[in-house]
Image (tube, rainbow over all chains, first blue to last red; front, side, top):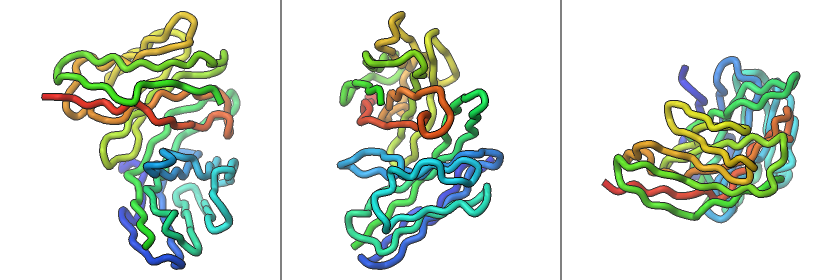
Length: 118
Length: 113
């Protein structure tokens, strides 16, 4: 298995531009997570999907951020408009969660996208 | 969320055992203890998890105190590749957002040749 795939690996953009980050989860996994990591705030969960449905988006910083999961094999995280404070490494992770009975399995993380907004 | 306390950093010599401590005095009965690690410039990776009993896998061992208020991740023979930030995380055994991972600052492990 190729693991979680993220693209691009690096993105440099100017303030005000739209940025789209992409993620392909591990085949067969039913849960997908977007995280952001900065030196100041560490690793933060932004949004969590289960079976393509957003379950918890309380970590999304503001309306400039949006995430979609149109099918089980693809998700996007979009920032519009981008700002310098959005500069961070964005990780996507996937897992095979079961709710009945509830069992939380390990999450598998992608290599991340390093975003720089100038 | 139940919190964990870890030392900011630790040092080890190559090929020696490493014991990484974690305190979690407010752990609840449904919380599993998970360990992840993050190598430089990579995403976090799962290491091990347990509930009450000690656990072993190919990567490490997890020793859990009888009162579950602390645990220790044991790397039996540290290698240079084990240099990473190690995160101890309490995770409720529920589905949905109650089972989300909450990462703290972790312990940065340095391994000297």
